[in-house]
Length: 198
Image (tube, rainbow, N blue to C red; front, top):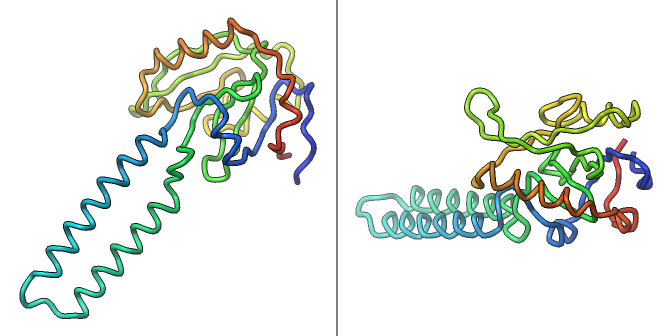
């Protein structure tokens, strides 16, 4: 069920629109540039395979046709899911709040007010996934805020955890530390067209 955003919540679960992600400051995740590069390499691979199959002697028309159909299908699926224009953000900063992805497919993020963020530090998720842990001051959190934190991909009572992907963890932590120094007030957060899920 979708409800109106409550600006006094220290922890909120938001579903962002593609345009909103484009205007957010992405601190960690797969950038559109990386996705475009991957898609470019895939297109070169498709053209190479299609060229080899089309000139190879002794192949049946059925095999050649099926190869082209499979390549086109995979190309469509990769293009459809890659979100080349927005990427796959893991940590972002939007309207004065820090968000960590909860459901990347539906663009859901757990947002926290900077006031309750104590620090960010590198961590390792078993077996070998590099991540960043955002430590929270939970003393002022309501029961609903704590419940939302338990809905994270990697639940924790006092942390929000996200993968660092292709970026150095220390760089992400430094960026979060700089944001905390600014202590921006989330004045426009309620006006965003994102929605909170309960």
